[in-house]
Length: 342
Figure 1 (tube, one colour):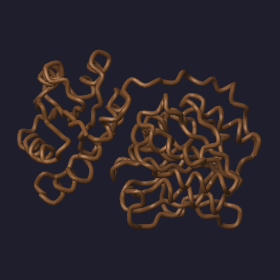
Figure 2 (cartoon, rainbow, N blue to C red; figure 1 turned 90 degrees about the horizontal axis):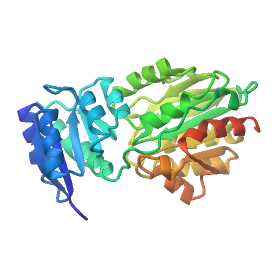
Figure 3 (cartoon, rainbow, N blue to C red; figure 1 turned 60 degrees about the horizontal axis):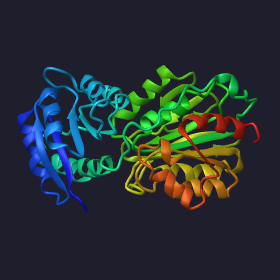
């Protein structure tokens, strides 16, 4: 495998050196340069042509978000943001970053080693495969989406990973309050899902909140599984759906897992459900979506041309789990069309 050339942009000398030392231990990673601020980073990009850049948001002379907005139109490359707990990461993703990881406490050697091995290295390798400047959907006119009637017995389940924070927003913001209750698993570090839910709630017509065990799934609202050590499932009590959070080992390397959510929806909602699988690396969600389709649910997968990483939707499509494959901008319309036939 060809080495991945990495540029590390970080103003903390100690953390920067720790990153360089640990990243260079991986045989397919080569840190070709480091930078203290965006101006040094720009020069390093021109000189070394890295495959991936890791970027801190809080930098001297210019913050990382402003840097991304200036950089990406001229020198597009995969950028992985390393950030403390802050909703600014979503501005960075919107500005063109592929993904983000939560910055660890460097005082803890165990936490740092776990961060490098199990998060940063994995995300760098994924970022190296990501598409940059992918198709951005035009606005979908609401009048093209035929209004829905009473859909309390229906449920919509969405799963996404790398590139999914923007893709999920693009889909959900087109939904009106007539949409059935939505449950979402978006792979994300612990602590960030609550901020992400608030961000979606502020930008969408429907209500969006981080899920709590026992929350009822209701029309016009989306529940996002919290990042951490619990999987989210859907259960049916009488005629209502509820979410259940249970601590359990990772599935497909993730907790929460899209497969766990989708499989519970297949069991409890069957033909009254609709599943959507969006951009992401790996296979999480593919088997669960297949279970949904076999149970009579309608299913949609994001197409390759609009995915940041065409992994999860590709595997789902290849195993026959995807009924309709759509560009990102057409998923909301397809969702309404299918719901109106259910």
